[in-house]
Length: 131
Figure 1: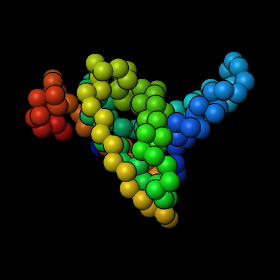
Figure 2: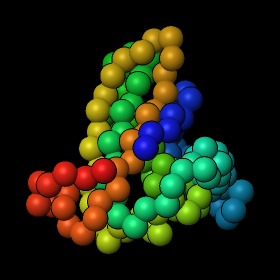
Figure 3: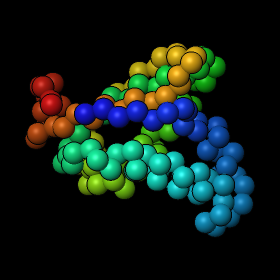
């Protein structure tokens, strides 16, 4: 199952800058986390429910300026949004058996594609097929 997130998610540098400002629930990072987690939760609301998953996240950036480690920090919002939507029970290692990242450039349509593959048992860890 796949879903798309339009545009770019904040990177690690933006998250760190936001976390350094203010305190409490109106701190810029707290507001950022709530905004993006809620947005992704709404996008994922109609997805099937899974017990265990492997995620394949393809990051389409408008250019190659951001480093991969900076880009993929946005997975925090994706995982929290999937939990919020009830797609996965929790974002712990008990339920997420792997996360794979791919980085592409699409100048006209930056986005994040999230592919969710349900896993039965420990198949992903054994190199077996998953749905």
